[in-house]
Length: 285
Image (tube, rainbow, N blue to C red; front, side):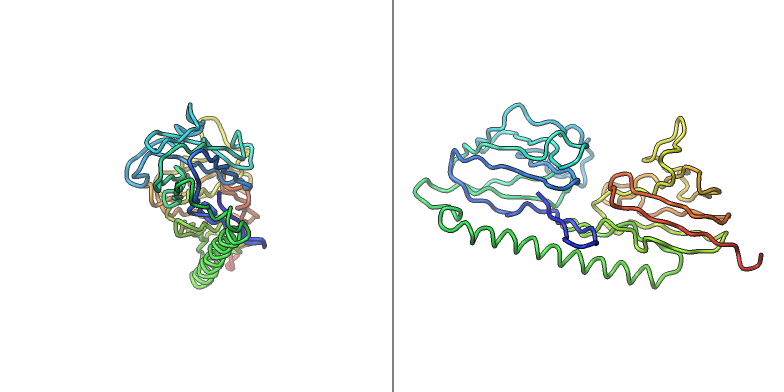
């Protein structure tokens, strides 16, 4: 479930590797997620994840049965290598008749995989040559990492060419890049910075001083629902709330910085996303 780039750019492929697995009736599929991003493998779950509102936490726990007969609902629950999830791997037993069946991740609307059940007399690719099957999986991973690097380059260029803009991650629904572009921005006091999420399917926040959140405050609820907020101190808690276009959330948020200082911020959903705003004295002072 998912892949990550091997360098310092946090790129994740939102795909099952391999995307289509060929099995016999009675085989067991093991779903493994070695990274912190949560996924599910959900058979016959919600279909229109973008338009129809639903609570992803309804799918946090595994279904009562992990045996898929081709018609029933089966869900692995949240799978990831992080304390957010109870498990980093899950198994589904396939008893479905010959045919092709789809499943998806409830977190990521475009992450769809397929199970093709073949007759017992037909050899599966693993039986024919496991190395060839592994090569296909690795090719799909490399393909997605290349797409992620191209998306990162595009975000870097756009942020460089527009004053006082921070791009809060980017992606295309199949690949996500978990970075702020730029990760460090230097401005003068009084400047307003726009934070824009360019990944329509991945939620992010811009949250300052999470440890100082007060009673009645929440990092997923914007400090001001007008779409902008003035943060007066590097120690002050402030947040954009959830930025995500696909689920009818706002795509961008503005923060104004009237006072000099170094302001650190994070995305509460992705530990690897950290950024800094350095505010210097205004030129006329």
